[in-house]
Length: 321
Image (cartoon, helix red, strand yellow):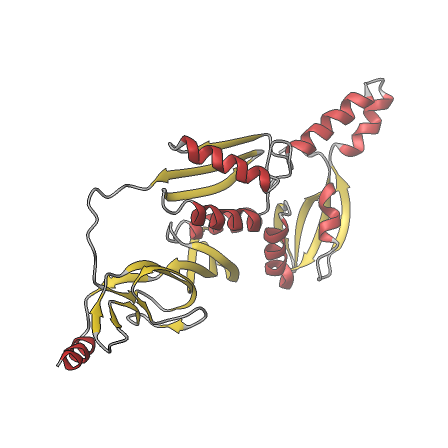
């Protein structure tokens, strides 16, 4: 990695997890994170020092290294100082601006629509790269807009390239009415409902357990008669999970190990789930391995089809006489 200019800092070992969380949230580029006695040493790009100053915990500045301190030396050696300065400015700008937008999908009208939406959201060429939170919000928005046409979607950034990938939804040739009820496949708190047909038994912010009836196929008419109707829809809920991942301890940088483990954990999350909250529970190190434990709040469709249970059948039969 080219050392444009880095500040060297130290922080007490008791604060390392707080620092890693802050670095993840604020996109800090921690370089060569290593433990020395009861301190952790790391380098940070000079242009990010103002972000570190906002951290709520104590740290100690040690020194500044890198090529920036040599720029003036180079200018004294009769080099073109302005050219050198513009070179470093171009490197800095390329790390923070979007230079290309790639939409990978097979629906031209959807691609055009997405580009218009991105422009409305101020996401365009030479615009700033987006935060993780913004990408997550945009993914939720696009999933809702194109839910009838798209089955899978992912939005991410690599370098200065903004990516959108999707696959179109497979169309069913013949759609038959499905009268089975919707049940909760896991515990969660209701986040939203998208039910086209059926009698909804839950509402937003209700806490449900696995197996609870969410949408049923019976309604009572104004003449006090029971009617069986098709059930179709989705019930989205906040669900709560713990994941962990480990890798061999090869004395690698803790920062690099953290992000590698984080990627391994995110790969365990169901593809259709959306991350709402992501928290570090614990990061431990032994002689043989490094382990990271994370807690996630996800947004998932918890509704699954199921047959009438015995109690529902008895109640319906009694009502019908």
